[in-house]
Every structure is written in structure tokens, then in C-alpha cells.
Length: 230
Image (tube, rainbow, N blue to C red; front, side, top):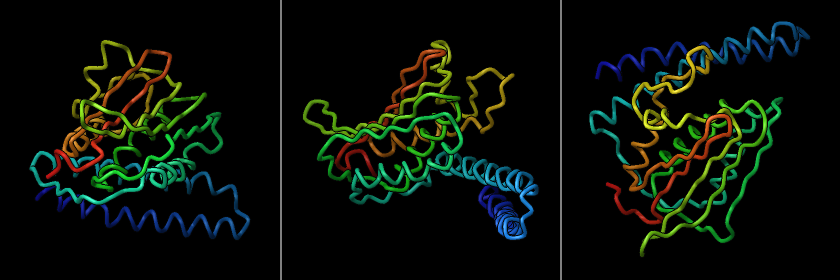
């Protein structure tokens, strides 16, 4: 209750700050004051970072309290993947990164919680972009089978800094940071932990394969139907 109330109290002024930053950007652009845009962008970027931190902490609190409610619905996979592409395009802008979307033909639908699925994918994609200075980011979606069960595999691959083998076991721990503290990548260390908990609530899991200096591959496996959901 405390976290929920504090989250509301913090988000209200933050949303006002973000709204004012957007107005300032428009006014500065219209007035030809391009020299002010970098400072306005800093305000906007910092405000959005704080909103993301608050959301992570609230998600963790809901999970710890057993509060999350899952809403099952059919989700068309190809449009979802294209939506993810559109969502991360701004993060790729002005960076030496290639984007690749690989969809198996005839993917159809998945029955799951659409909001949680989007949140997991955006977290995995944002991490891939954050830890990749140059090279390629790929989202691949295909059908997988385990016995008589059918799964959808969402693989997010990058050519970034990778993760040392002895750090892989720390990836999904709350507040864990596995990269060198001398490099400031930001974040709460909650994104992957929350994403895996959501994946397991949805009846699936997140698997990782990575090598230091050679990129990472995170695979979200979810059942095609509503198995494991409540």
C-alpha cells in the first residue's frame, strides 16, 4: 500500500514535468532555439528514467504480494512483433545498429496476457539495445514443441558486450547488476527478474545464452494456449 501510494505521488509530478518538457521542445523548435533542445531532452530522458524505476519497483511489490491479475486473450503474433519493432525504433535512431525481424510464416495467435507479454519483450529489446554499441539487434519469433505441447519462442539476440559465464546465474536476481560497475548503464537491476517472474506466471520461462564480448540471446518461451495461467 505504501509503495502504491508513493508511486502515485511521484508519478503525478513526473508526468507534469514530462508534459512541460514536451511543450518546451515544441516551443523551442518553433522559435528556432535549437541550442536549447539538448537540455530539454535531458529533462525528458531523466524523467522517463524515473518513471521506469517507479514502475519496476511497483511491479516487484505486486509480485511479492501476489497481486498481479492475468487477462487472457488471443494475440496476433505478426502484428505484435511489428508493434515491438515500432516501439524500439526511436532507441535505434542515430546509432550504428541494424534491426532484423525474423518471423516464421503462419505464426497465428497466442492466448496469453498481452500487456505482460509486451512488457517482457520491450524489456529484453531495450536491454539488447542498451548493451550493444554497434552491430545487430534481432527479434525472431517461431513455433517450438516440447512433447505434445506447442510453444511460441521469442528470441532477442544482440552483438553487444555479452555476459561472463560466472555472471549468468545472477541475471534474474532482484536488483542484480552483472556488468562492470565502472560502466554506467543505468537501470534498477529489476527488469530481468520481473520479466522472468511474469514469464513463469504465463506458464513459460526465459532462457539465456551469452558469451562475454560476443553478444547475448534471450529466449522467451510461452505456451501457445493458456496452460499455467491463473
